[in-house]
Length: 234
Image 1: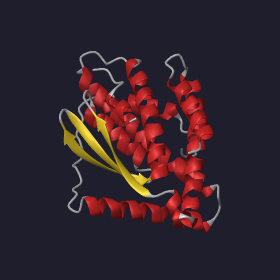
Image 2: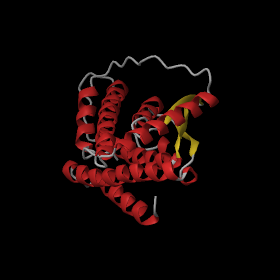
Image 3: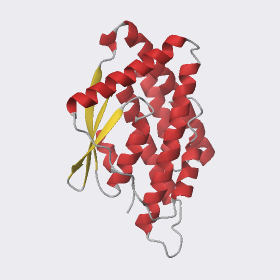
């Protein structure tokens, strides 16, 4: 991402993360940042189809730590998958090491968006009262699950919208090929990878978290490591 665009996206996301921002203002800032990120992703994919050296497949490891490490890992996976990255979770201490695979430009987009959404989720949780008689941790885990679910759905729709704007059959083929190449890389590194069973959450915060995910409002268009362990209170 060019320095000028990177600076603009970071400024927009920083405004969205500001706790003094109203939900509507935060949504507007995030929508614009996501629009820029999504268009950039399609542009880089098309450029790499002509010159693969400009955007190689790579990987990186992101550490997420307690509290709520599993839930933060779920948010990262919800961001990574629509942006054509794959995420492998490995236990590490009281948290996880998330091994991300993807093209360089897509990994960059995941970093930017995940870090901002993690901060916004923390702000949303801090402003949501835990119902009387409910265990706070159970409520917050289910809240984060709802938030991640909606964010992932919105990103998937947004990425599809950004690709459709190009109105060229080759775009779908290029993006599908990128996804396939990332999947092959994961298989090379983890040939015996198993899918984790779905979690069962007891809290009642899923609906409130999903609503917060809708307020993030990724604009209908698609869109560091150290930050992954911070920001969500016990």
